Image (cartoon, rainbow, N blue to C red; front, side, top):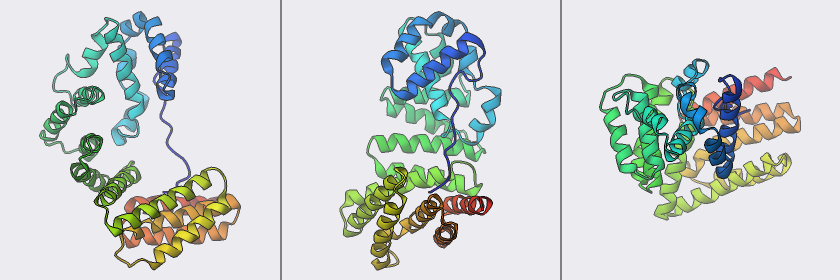
Amino acid sequence: MGGFGPVKVPHLGEYVEGELGRVLCALSVADRDGDHAGFRALCRQHAAELDADRDAWLSVPRELRESFRINMDGMRPFMLTAQRIARELDGLGRPAALRQLSGADKPGNPMEKLHEAEILAEDGEFEAADALLREELGEGHADDVWVATIHSRLAIHAAIRNDLDTAIEHARRVDELTRRRRKPGTAEAADFLDDLLTARELRRGTPAGRRLGACREALTHAQQLSDRALFAESNRALLRLLDELDAYPEESSARRFLGKLCGLMGLNHVHLGDRDEARAWTRKALHECRQRGDLAGEEVYEANLKEIDRKE
């Protein structure tokens, strides 16, 4: 969307004191870096203390509970590390952490049921995982954030199985729930839904789908140029794409990229030091989002405009 910075997810162990905290942080770094051998070695080396002090890392720290409540998907890497440690310990003959995490000791706890579904999904047992998640939806929870989290998991599982229609159905529900209360995660939900809709149109192989795919590739290329600090080159690529989009009929699905296109133009001009152009393009992005009812985009570009004005 062209925002100014991602949310930092703390490492497991940042809120645990002493040597155990250092070990957990090292495990978290190894896990996120994909260092599987280092991760397993650390688990073997510290298996006894990880097992004995499992309550210190299996529960969500008090300092992070609000972050989890409002943006469970964004905080997912934190709990994935805990799940992988528990599974590694189970393989080392220490099953207590995995039993605790999967809810064997607390049946009926919604959070534990979600963890159990995550573990099943990681093992490729999507049908069993989805059955747990649908059971949780059947409980009739009133918390939109929690319901959106469950639908998000179901959408991801369906996408992995290449069932795009089901994935889109759940992703639409996530988008509706996050937009309704303007919760954190709104932009991510909208992007995920857009990715799924694009994939489905590309699969159908229609002329509109091919145009959509070509525009998406062009926008991705422009974003990559911007990420490499080639801001002027990125803007030239975006202007070429803008000419193409302007030639499409108003109802063309590819025109939904106009907001992102203008937003990236604005961000590039920020980096180039041209505040007037940055403001003008960001306003165009905001207008496009308002025209199309894109509340996530509205939030992002309203914030970007404030940031542009603040830096003057």
